[in-house]
Length: 541
View 1 (cartoon, helix red, strand yellow):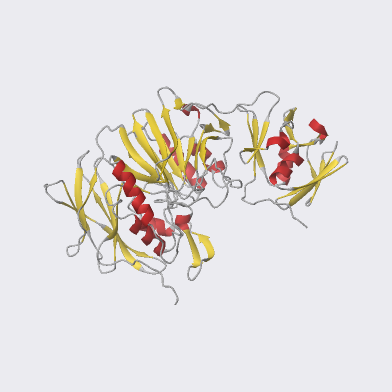
View 2 (cartoon, one colour):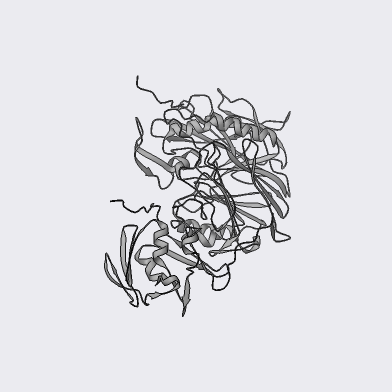
């Protein structure tokens, strides 16, 4: 018998009930809910315990999905008292939800905790995604930590955000949680992913720009203060003494302009951000080229940038302009949260030169972080649902230090290291350091290409290299490379260096193979990247 999808369509009774911060967290809270088309309006009744009920009328809009049309309602309770618990119901005059509650932020708050999670989407069955483990896991965490103020995500909240069946399953999985505690989502690539044909199998994948379903369902759930035309998937909010910037995965140049201005206008001592793709990643072939060059100036104004995507945990040293530092004032800490719903990485991940802490999370476990702000100290505890602690650190602004202490690597004079996608080339390059002559860097390129998985053919006085569907022949004492695109002038001659290996000018050679490089002067290493995610593997005849 052909299986039928579980659409979890809207009914006249409110569901998808969610509280979120879209204004001043001390004096307001937004409630979002969904109904079928029989309820074109709605409101919330909001009240202190045994207090007078206040009514806040909802903004209501139809949400036309790939399979259905329903109403999304947003009501913002305003003029509330700081540090107060409020009870509420939502719906219309005829059908209302049960009673829930939320808490407003206290005045002058400098000590609070929140949960950060990422990649809690589920792909176990696209006919009927099951988020029950996520529900049980998060309820357990909140029971152990009843003072948590909100949930902050780094994206991929559902598996295919351009299909309503996915959001409906995710919201069912969050029942009993986000009706009480603000759910502050970042839009990940899965949240704006769709397929031209979804049943009986996924075919013709695409990504929506803007993130249509994410934006339409949450238009008034979050502050409408992002860049024009790209709001909702980009927004910022304050809680206590922290300013949060939430960054979508589209239009990086425009988002960067907004981010710089938004951070500069904030007077909060802490600046946290979330961006789904990790800038300082753990995968063997990931690339940050579609974001970091365009968003670096804005991102490097943040104290901490949370990310996800790879489904593993990592925490970087403070980083700025490719250089790795020890003190938090010197750079941004990149904090990759792992996956929050037993989704092991789809590819191998590994420790990199920029990581101060790393865990591959290839086990069937859920990961989360509890972040505690206490004045000028911020503590981060990353845990698994079985109780094991993956990582724990404290960023102390007053002492300008991160504990436990770990010193960022600095390599000695004449011992410049070469890293490819953050990994040392190891034994094959242990005594083949890059060489700088008259301001030009040279590397034993054949060693690098061989390490990467490219093809290397050595002959007397020359070497032929092939990788990423490009090839070139380099000759000793010549500045001309013979490539598949014709002759290219390298600008400087190839020479014979350490262990009789041929050394090629780095910049012009990288351009031949579509690679890029950077020199971290403080750390004395060269980092080489390829801006794609190919796996170069030699052809076996």
